[in-house]
Image 1 (cartoon, one colour):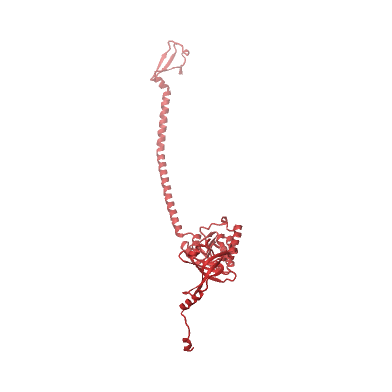
Image 2: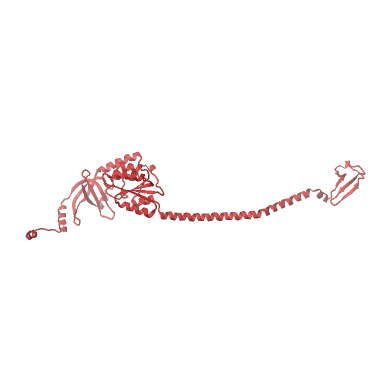
Length: 382
């Protein structure tokens, strides 16, 4: 190329070109655009809300921004899947050379097509009882193996693996990586879920998918996926999207977790906590055994004392009873009567009780308290 031609060129730096292009783009103002909200990103720390408007029929997308202070005035709060009309103008972010739409005014024009379809499907499945709390199953305390359904090379896999390895490394993890985004995702998810649930030893399945746009998460609201989750042979923990997302599989799952890491914490116990609980149980058993031993030792000592003192006590009781019997016998003895001055008169060995049975001149024996007398009857007085 000739040097003269080169000298005639008008060459811009990137910054100068972007600045000049921004001047042309900035002339496009006060334009109304209609589309469906497919992606919404906001943070309390940001002064701007980022949103993507999508033409559902063609798939064309337009990135847009809106001041957060204006966005916060929208009531009820705007959500993904809604159809809106926005007024504003084009702007170019010179530093990155990216074109965007700056929203000044936003108006709802009815529910988006996806939102309408999801609401209709949700009502139908809810009427069938697929979301009923009564059909939710409890998670196993100590699963033999945990099934993990996630995307290929997804970050959720690493999060679940790390959490389970930290909490309970003894459990097996069976991973099924499959397509989780796009038109073919629902069939792939249903197939992978069936394989996991039938795998030997798998007692619970984690359905994990990181955050994404409204369209990215649509496969997890597909009727086939929702029914497969509800009909799964083992309990299912859904950890799809962020905490504010609510795909229909969350409602059909037995447990909903806000993140894959939280799901891992739900399906396996904490080994350190188990060890601590086991140590506390061991200490309680040891203390209980000591208390029982002390109680039995005291009972045995009291029994020994009773056994030692019982014969002596029994002997004393018998001796006292014998003394009382002796006193009574002595009081009833004829000798005691004689000691009081009475006498026993016998004739031929028979005790005389009637004076009329004796004739004068008869010999009788008189027994006194001390000794006896032989006597002859001189006179009988009836």
